[in-house]
Length: 249
Ligand code: ADP
Ligand code: MG
Image 1 (cartoon, rainbow, N blue to C red):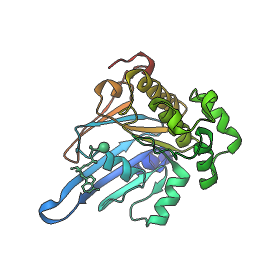
Image 2 (spheres, rainbow, N blue to C red):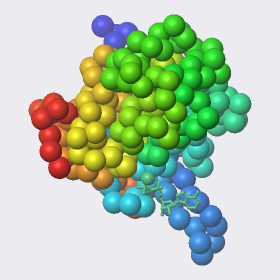
Image 3 (tube, rainbow, N blue to C red):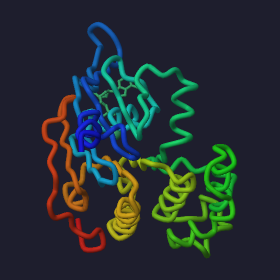
């Protein structure tokens, strides 16, 4: 019992897939041109929650995601993600953290154009030494791309490319999946398929944080965080998340 209390006090970021931020700030530029992208952000996300981060353009959503995922460093504050204290880590330490714990889904996919869908996923398994190359066909089948495995990105639609990028992000079996406007470049039907994959990933026990400016898409989340001018202005549990397959926008 006291062990449990102790664990809760230590924060959700101590546990696999959980996130705890305390007083996290980040400013870009200096002097007159300084922009505070994150202003004293506190955040607690439980392991396995599907989180939507909403906010206007420029409110700090991408910066928040990148700081959580160790792509960017904060100027101050403490960041505990998936049991790892990443505040103050050097670039090599952050690289290790990303390799071992995080999968990223980018708005514009970031696939390697000279590699097929299958190779785009396999290369991550090889580079990270995590996951299993033999599972790649299964992963591509899970994102409904079994019959496109040997196609190059230019031969795939936007939705198909985004699904390759999700398979790639999942190939290392990350504790945490971070997705920056994953449906931003997609039409409604393909966007819905991508949201369904994120929801399935979360239900399989991984933490998922999705940045979006789509209120409807946020309806699938277990927790909705709103940002404005680098601050978290709301952080609410959604008691009734809707199925991704049932939403329209
Ligand atoms: P969002 O994802 O919500 O659109 P961002 O996190 O990208 O917001 O940006 C937050 C603020 O920080 C914005 O004012 C943006 O212009 C600024 N910003 C983001 N990245 C940089 C950068 N690399 N250099 C300078 N300013 C930046
Ligand atoms: Mg952004």
